[in-house]
Length: 205
Image (tube, rainbow, N blue to C red; front, side, top):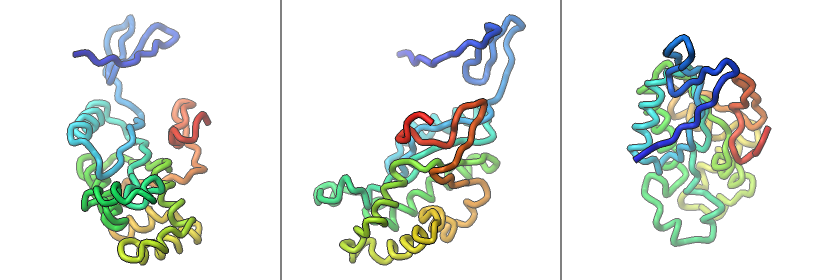
């Protein structure tokens, strides 16, 4: 019945809750500079969660967002490498790497369509690194039917020092270039001395 939000007081006694700043002078509307979203995991998104996220963005009106684990990696995850049951149960939109990459890009399209002027910063998360690990270990050699040929192209991008997910996405969905930015693992972006460009699996920065 209740949802608790953390409120941090400023030295002058004022505090902000959502888009309202409360102080001895009264109540002032103040938009957010940026936001960090929870992990998306495209293909597993709950519609109510996406709706609530969009409502927050519309209310707070940030100029940018930061989000990690937009790509899930179910199709190539090392966690399922020896689990034939888990692989068999994957839905069609996640059962091959190609299908999953399309699902990933279409999730990003929803953000671009809803917020065409919003800067979407994609933080390198541990699930994006699932793909890097899959390519680095050449596990696609055993995926002759489903993932092999695509993975060969992605591996070339990786060996050339590129982000294979970014390269594939911009090749097939070039319009996403307008407001989507892929950050590499060495990116260091801070807002009000808060690091925005590091996913939680990296720990404290």
